Length: 258
Image (cartoon, rainbow, N blue to C red; front, side, top):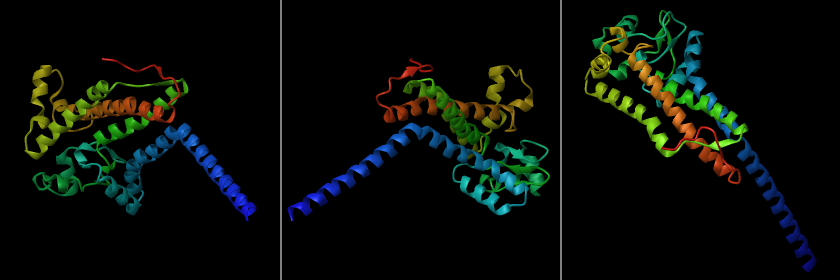
């Protein structure tokens, strides 16, 4: 009786040991490859919006529409602030969108209506999120790849929280002013006369007004999105890595103190 009990106890201990060993190996593998797993998943996430216009142009409307629908929860998808593929232009004004859609500008003044426009054969098809979202999310992926290269060189110490605030603040200001402008029907972000005064009008009028690619609004959205991505990766990724590799001594290459 005692012998059987001892055998069962030994067997249970052995099984527990094997399970613990497997769990330990799994945790070790994840700790070593967490960034690879994240970058792979995030890369898939940032590529899908570009497949929506590709699918639509190929006549695969169902998967294209599915991507537009899924990413509509993450972005307003306003066509005048989105990029178009497979057409003569990369971006279009509201007037051009209205004309291609068969409406007047006033008829598509409501953003809930305008965001439904995904494109036309004569214009091309829009990417499933706006230029700001492209800059934000794609920069997280690109800077994540850069951080993976830095890790191979032993660089693990990142940005301070103060730099994180500095880097995301421009996007917060730009996005908030756009939101106020759109909700209250203002035009200070439509004409950007404040920028004309600040720069003494050294650029062409077309640069200051509207949302076309290369305009001031477009440049600000892309730039602030890139700064946001750099701040997120530079601050958070080293923190995550230190959680997985607490015994590693951080080596600083791009850490900054203010």
